[in-house]
Image 1 (cartoon, rainbow, N blue to C red):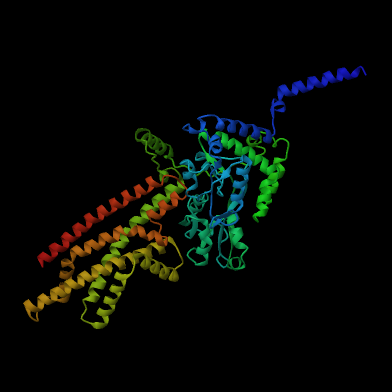
Image 2: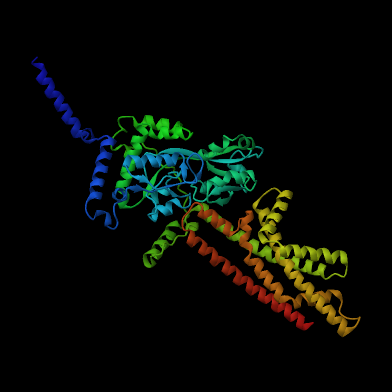
Amino acid sequence: MRAWPTLRLALAGILAGAVATFPFVATAETPDAALAKLIEDARAEASAPDTCAKPELDRLVRVFCDNRIRPGVREYYPLFGTREGQTRSGYDVDVARALARHLSVEPVFVRVNAATRVPLLADDRIDVILATMGHNTQRDGQVRFIRPHYYQSETIIVGPRALPVKGWADIAGRTICVTIGNGSNAQIVSHNARLMLFDEAGVLPDQLREETCTLAAQDDSFFDYYFIEPDFANRFDKKFGFAQVPWGMAVARTASADRLARALDLMSQIFHRDGVFLGIARANRVGTGFLERQRAVWNRPECNTDAGSTNSACVLPALDAALQPTPFAGRVTAIEDWIEARTGVDFSLPMFKTMPAWSLFKDGIVNSLILVAGALAATLLFAMVLGGLQSSRRFLLRWPARAGTIVLQSSPVVLTLVIAAAVAQAIFPYSSAVAIGAAIVALGLMNGSNAGQAIAEAMHTLRTERGSVQGTGGIPTIDLFGRAVSRSATQIVSFLINAAKGTPIASFIGAPELLSALTDITSFASGRATTYTLLLVFYVAVVVVVVWLCGRFRSWLEHRQAAA
């Protein structure tokens, strides 16, 4: 019996030493207690007089002031966020409702997509993103992600079953349909694929069915819904997957959002631990493997604390999506900062900061110059050919040429481009060179037909003059044609300039010129306004040079006519 007090004192000493060595033993709370205290304090602050009228109000306090939370959700992403009339459904939507219930406020949903979700958060038009957003290291600088993550997926390439695509080596030169803002776009571009961009993921299956897209890239969670459909599953399959990424809710990266972020962190822990996320996933027929593993994690004692969301043994790391920087990326960043500090303008030059973007930018410039030079040469060639055929005295040459000219003049340029691309791809395997060649032919035909008509009209005028002034004798046909070309110099130059100005539209058929390259860059980088301003400057410079060259060409033709 005497040993008991001694033993008790010894145990007390051990416990005191443990507390001194590991303070969290005494201070750790359950996430439930920490969340209850946070909500209680924010509600009390919201109920204080004049608090809700303050500018720059804490966002969690404002949620209670307004009695609402504004989740940004998708409306066109089956199983996760869809809308029919006023009815919303999906995993993300139901998670948002569960968060609102836990806070005892109303959810006010705002439609977002991959391109708009971060800007809407930055503009304070939503409180939290809940829109299938993967957590990667690039986005860490844009938003504050909630931990733990509430889902996980990987990007997959989907295409026709008969198409022999098994890995990265098989997509070089191919066009892949993607959504703007998808974090995996940069990785696709780095393997020399072309991108066709869409605002909403929901259009991708229809684009595959209609053969507008041969391949499409999107989260496996998105395509899971469509592979349930027998017709889709019979025609298409998964080619390969990459970039497994955890999904995160996100709030603004500002001090005013810190308490809201903390509340959402704690709720996410509780929802994993108690199977709330898991139950919502099952109700929406969403895969549950990740959520089942996470439930086990967040029931572990070391994770089920108020500090669990900061414990690296409990939370998942963000996908490392850092792109290789260019050798001059630091200097470019310094220039951006200098301009912003002096003008207040958010100036961004993403095409100079990472190697994939820089490579796209350089190739885009080279391809654009090739396209402009090719379009000018094709316009001049088709002008001569069609002008000569329409001037022929032979009916079988003249009338088909005139009919073809009328068709070309009546057709929208985009339709002509599409037809030219379809014919080219029926003859040759698809490649960037084939797309550029098809664009050159289409632009040459469109502008050359108009210039050729001008030559033919000048030829008709010269023949009339020849007949009335010189009788039956006169200038040989080749000289007469040369004079007709010289006389129509102004029209020819006009259509040469038009051909140069029209080259950006070649991006519509996948020609990798500068507009297409910059579109690819902005699909995974910020700075869209600056990027397209630079595009405008480039094409203005190109057209100025073309105008100057065409002016010299016109002077030569007019001098030739005067000499004749």
